[in-house]
Length: 255
Image 1 (tube, helix red, strand yellow):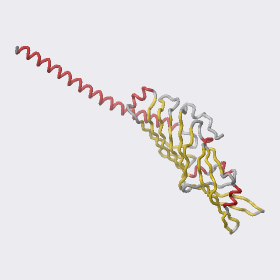
Image 2: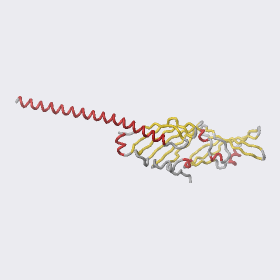
Image 3: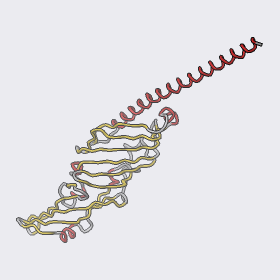
Image 4: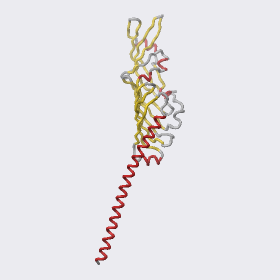
């Protein structure tokens, strides 16, 4: 009887020991997976940062930091795409002007191809807009960005007299076209300065329109445009853009 009891106790101890061993192994495996996944995530983020920094378009310099969100980065990689990637700029410059950008990408393919969707917010200093064809074509000077307004000066000659009309324009977005409509104006002729809102409405009856889509690869859309003192803030969105073809992709249109 005592022998049978000792055998049962021995088997129980063996089973308990085996169970404890399995639990410890599972915990160690989980820890190893978490640590390994963190290392893989960090490596993948570094690779994304290098790829983006090396693929910046002409006239744009700087670096980005990448953060891979969601669950296991390794599992996401094995599925072929990262669920949620955030890119934040570091020391970005556009056409010599300081800029900042935050981009959120959903479904970023690990080996190139189409992204599911992306949104971005760009802030660009006014020096990047020193030569806007639509303004240059109407004889306007380099724009100055204020709080919700764009200021410029129209130069005209009338009967041999040089005239300058300081114009305040208000930007708005319609589709992919940015409209700049005059809200105030002042005429300077020699020493005289007079209100000229009525005059500028004759000079710019439809304001100034800029097709924003012409500056972007097809498939990327402008969702918002705003200005504040010394800089412009632009919202962008994209869906199904092919990363492999974005450098050679045609630009959009407003037609």
